[in-house]
Each structure stands twice: as structure tokens, then as C-alpha cells.
Length: 124
Image 1 (tube, rainbow, N blue to C red):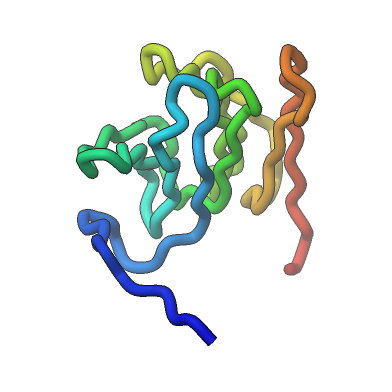
Image 2 (tube, rainbow, N blue to C red):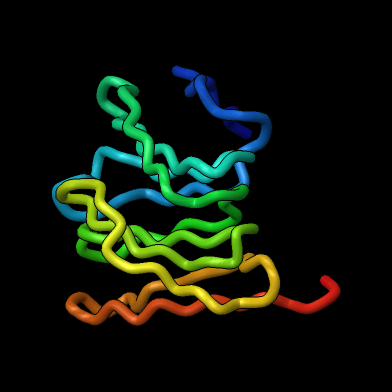
């Protein structure tokens, strides 16, 4: 049996990592990380530089990336779903009206279609 060796460690996150996704397309050398905070971090794997997405007001629980790499969806304890454009790291949409924290979001795997969905389970 072979063992995986640690070659680098990403630092700068708060507490535990709640979700992690790999960006596709022109950003294929980057990962999107939801840590135990209201920020989303995008790390470039070539040099481990970090960009931060600010907008959520409570812990981000889930991140998702589009297959083309142009969008990131996020949701969390602030009861919102957000859609971010990777080109300029701007929030281009906010879904509000949920009554509970949102623990999951998703984007269509079909290129060119960007349905965003989320679910919050009451009492759990």
C-alpha cells in the first residue's frame, strides 16, 4: 500500500474546513474553500496566494463551482445563497427569504446553465 505524502500546507483559514471545491476552466489551478467563517477563500495552487470573497454575514457552510469555472455558488448560516463571478470576484446574485441556515447549494453540471439550488432542513 502506498502512502500519500504532504508536500505543502495551506494556512490562513479559521478552524476547520467545511467545504472545498476545485475551480475549472481558466482557473483550474485554484481551489475554493469554505472555512469556519463568513469568508470564502480562493487559493492558487501554483503559489498558494489567496483571494477572499466577502459578503456573507455568518459562517459559509457550502461552496460549489460551475463546470466552466466562471461562477461560484455559496450558502450558509446567514440564510442566503450567493452567486459570485470569478472574473472579477463580484457577487452577482443573492437569494434571500430562507428561514433557516442553508447547508447545501449546487450548480448545474451542464455548461451554459446555471441553476442554483439550496436546502435547509428544519430541526436538523
